[in-house]
Length: 496
Ligand SMILES: Cc1cc2nc3c(=O)[nH]c(=O)nc-3n(C[C@H](O)[C@H](O)[C@H](O)COP(=O)(O)OP(=O)(O)OC[C@H]3O[C@@H](n4cnc5c(N)ncnc54)[C@H](O)[C@@H]3O)c2cc1C
Image (cartoon, rainbow, N blue to C red):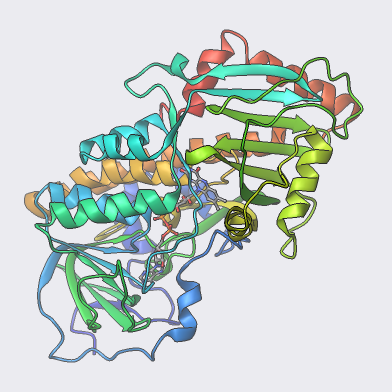
């Protein structure tokens, strides 16, 4: 039963907790930009598949809703973080570092081994440095110092990442599972050896009271294995002063808070896989029928953007001589196998990915990494509503093609942590102001990141005839001063 004066949102009920009304009270004065967005109702849920997984996978194993009972735990955490993806984990670290008590609720019984994000940009490395794990990440990853844009075997332009300046003059490539492992270990360390992540716990309802927020949970599944959270028992009710939705693009917290999910642009389908390259791949050949004046080997620390007639081919170095390959496809190609992706790369660029010398283990890793995805970009109409805040993919879904969702989420976390500290220590009014500022600043950053990713997706489309000429001229111009410095800043996420 809801208590007097309490507003409650239950699964399936109209989202009236933290509704637009509550949100408006918080952000009323400064939300003209969102008002326009709110007129455009976004479709909830991305067209993503494959790597863009979410807790939905755990639903099958879920138990019925747990009723709230009086025996449920009564401890109040300063902040409950919903979701232990890379963004939720990083935020939890920053909050614990500030001395706040944090509980992290995660629907998955075990962390995902699937690696989506690989690129950690300089501002992201700087946030890891705040946590004291930048050096460990750098030691485990591989640096990308340069990006090259090609078409038809001709280099259109090159970008030295160091041109953007700063303490970390490179993009660090590290598979997401390794990044998450570092964050998990650091979180336990910062929290005095106690892991605050409760796994197998799905949040189903959020109720706000004047002093705190109550989360209703159900047990997603009970089995807890290696790397699982501290407490296998399912809490029925969790109390916290503030709640943060770090629960991914299909965020339940966002939905329960009545915050709209605004779709931006169209989805584009891609195919992605990791291949071991014994020696750096050589350019040449391909489907374009163009001039192919140049060609050569890709250095092990160079990212490739091949803007070919049939669509973009992207390649990024990974640790231990591996590379990630991503190609634009003409449909969401679920049934594709690794050889299909290799065939597209060969046809478009002449680069040979599959080698007879690949071991069975290497081929298995390639097959495992293969995924088809089509991400449609989205933005939440608000990132804070009273005692609820959103960040990461729950707040903005950015295309991975040139978009940098995890890094953007980390920058959200770096802005949200001090705002939450102020809210917890300084009282509700100060907190409301801090969260309003967070909402405004980070929505602006998300808007820029989404626009930048939309531009990248656009120039990566298939192009022939006049369009090809114009597109290549544009890419060449971007590779020259004065645009080059701007491009370096944009590519390294300065200003976000
Ligand atoms: C192919 C691909 C490549 C990418 N490459 C990059 C890259 O190189 N660099 C980059 O910066 N970004 C990249 N991204 C984006 C990046 O992967 C995401 O932005 C990032 O994973 C978002 O992290 P998150 O913690 O916000 O959300 P998620 O990683 O989605 O984590 C959300 C967590 O919340 C849990 N959860 C959901 N609902 C509930 C609930 N009700 N209760 C409890 N728990 C719940 C889920 O189980 C999940 O663990 C890429 C994305 C894709 C698809």
